Every structure is written in structure tokens, then in C-alpha cells.
Image 1 (cartoon, rainbow, N blue to C red):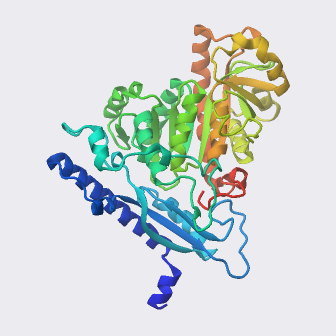
Image 2: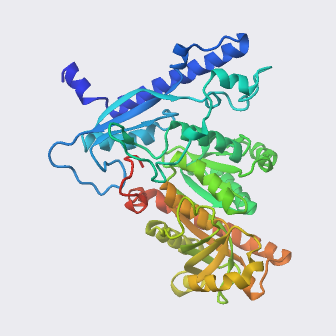
Image 3: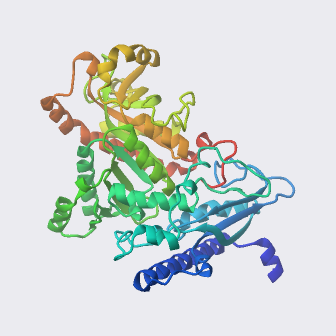
Length: 491
């Protein structure tokens, strides 16, 4: 191949990602250096310098000739010929993801890749070190904003994910759901809410609404780190402490006891592994659909493989018993938190791959099968409210719940499922019945304590077993069920 042929063919995926890393690193370094100089001496960046403070842009051009190759894959494919582009941040961290998306586009479709400096400036808070964003001696934030790019909310949106972007002639189509500034915005928010470095958050995510699940997770994680043949290597705690394989037990226990999890609104705990198959993160989102939306808005930019809700619910049927499980196959969205983004008439489907894995995991963990499992694990509709005291409106809600055939009530599951649907992240819900508000079995302290001791550990193990099952199902897990007809090529 001659030099002109190589230029015509464009960059290889590896060359493109290398170029993204080079441009992003150089732009970030230039911005940090200019900030340090301004703080030190008051010298403002010149117009020419500011041109260097820009995200790299990845361009993928597809001009098919002849027959178009068919693929059943739901991602890394094109909906129409043309130029696709997106700005990219943290390309070193996202390297494997980027290569996974680009290789089929080049190898199967013959797309041409190019990387250039974009017109989108990097806001200065996104390159500063953690904790020093607004500590600049006598300088005010307003003064910094006069001379350096800042986050402009008009540029941070979900128009692509929500399908509200408008195609215009002579403009490229979106290559990914989120551009660089949207990703950077969420990465910083993740650190704030979860108390951990976003780089440690794993692609398999468990959500819970009770700290007791977290305590069982930490106990299980410590056992895994002590097991010689375990694939897991380290546990990252809220606040940044890390427990590693081989640490002295006393040191590990001290790190767990000292972690300041209570300082963070939605603390995250990540058990990492070294085999490239992705570890597990559990996030205590607390109570309510608003927290559920907040967490998933930001976690989605990491493009996780799946998130699962494992928490408590109220059972709505007489036949249910405290400690039974509810596998949600439909959601009544009475929380209203996402009605403007995903209208209530839009169905949020259950994903077969996740449902099957959850039921199989329940069989394996409980040891129950057939009718015995059916008595304990019921599939049905979950209704979610934004009002913890929904019982006080029972006379108004009774008819609606009856029409919906709901079998359980909670506050978070509908929001988590709807966000998974909206942001193209596979999702599932397995809840445990902790009370029966319609049948006089309310959550009293004594009964609740006995329930927690018996049920939480088993419930958590079902969630972890589900993740183990799904790890080998990535091809079917990232299916077409979550993709629209005008979807960007990237997953």
C-alpha cells in the first residue's frame, strides 16, 4: 500500500485510539499548564493557546459500495451512509470499549476513520485534580471563567439518547450516545455522589436501597479476596481506601471500619478482577426514584454491561410471604420521575436474557425448583411510587393497582428499569418482600430484624450469581431490544 492509499484508507482502529489519546493528553496538559501559570502570575491564555484546549473528535465515514453486509449484532453497525462523529474524553480509559466499537465498523463495513481537534473546548474543572477545583488562592471562580472554558449547561444534554437531535444536511450524524463534555460532566458527578474514583466502577452494577446489602457485599468481597483461586483482586471502598488480595486481615478490617461511607449520598463499593471480564460494583442509592435517576444518569456514560435492582418491596398479594421474591416483568410508573423523557405510554419491557438469568440464579442459590420455587419467586408487575406514604392514598390508588395486576410496590425499580431502557443499559429487578401493607403485616422493628438476618445474604448471592451467568452472555445481552431505528453506531 502506498502512502496515498494509506491516507485514503484512513486510520486503523488502533491508530485512531492512539491519536485520540495523544490529542486529549496534549489538550489537558496545555489547559493545566495555562491554569497554573494564571494562578501563579496572572498571565492570561492567548487566543492561540485556547485553541489547544479542545477535545479530540473521532470521525467515521461510511460510503458503501456494492452489497451491504448484514449483521445481527445490535451495535457497531450503521443505519445509513454518511459521516458520523463524536468528541471523546478519557480515551485511555475507554480504549478497549472504543476498539470494540471501531473494529467491526472498519473490518466489516469498510468505514474510514479520522481523528482531529474538535471545536468543543474542555472545561477547566474537568482537568484539575480531585479536590482543588475551586481552590486557587485569591482567585474567584468568576475570574477564572473570564479566561478559561467552563461547563456550559446548554452543551451538556441527552438529545442523542432521547432521540431529539435533528439531522441537518452537511452535518455529521452522532457516533455515540454521549459526547465528551457530557461524559466528563458525569464522571465528576460520580466521584461526588459515590465517594469513589469513577475509574474503579465496574461494568456489572447492583443497586440496593438498604445498607445491610452493602454490609453483606463487603463480607463476601473479603472472603473472595482471601480465597486463593478467586478472580477478584481488590475492593475499593467509599473514600478511596483499597483492600487488596494478600493484605493482613487486621489491616483490611481496619480499612473497612474506617471508611467514611456516610459522607456520600450514594456510596459505591467495587470488587475488581484482573481477567478483563469485569468486576462488580454495588451502589446504595437509598430511598426514592430521584436518587435512582441521578445515579443512572451518570453511570450510563461508563457504558456498563448491566444493572440490577436488588432491594425490598411490599407484597400486594395474600399468597405472598415475608421473604418471598418478586421478579419484575412489568412496571407501573407511578413515580412520574421520567414521564417527560419517556412518556408513560411507552412500554418498558422485561429483557428475556436478564429474566432467565435471575430465575436460574434463584434456583441455584435457594436450591428450590419447580413448584417449590414458584411458591417463593413470583413474576409480575411492580408499581413504584415517589411517595413513601402511598398507603395514605390507598382509596385513590386501589383501582389502578388492581387494573395493573401489581404484585409488589417499591420506590426505585421503575426508575432504574426506565433509565436502562432510555440509556440502552440492560436492566433487571429482583425484589424481596419485606412487608405486606395491604394485609396487616407491616414492617415492625422485631420482625424486620429477623427478616434482614435471614433474607439479605441470600438475596445478594442471587444478584451476584446472576452477574456470573450474564458474563458469558454478552452477545445476546446487548441485543436489539434497546436500540431504536436511528441509533448511533456505538453501543
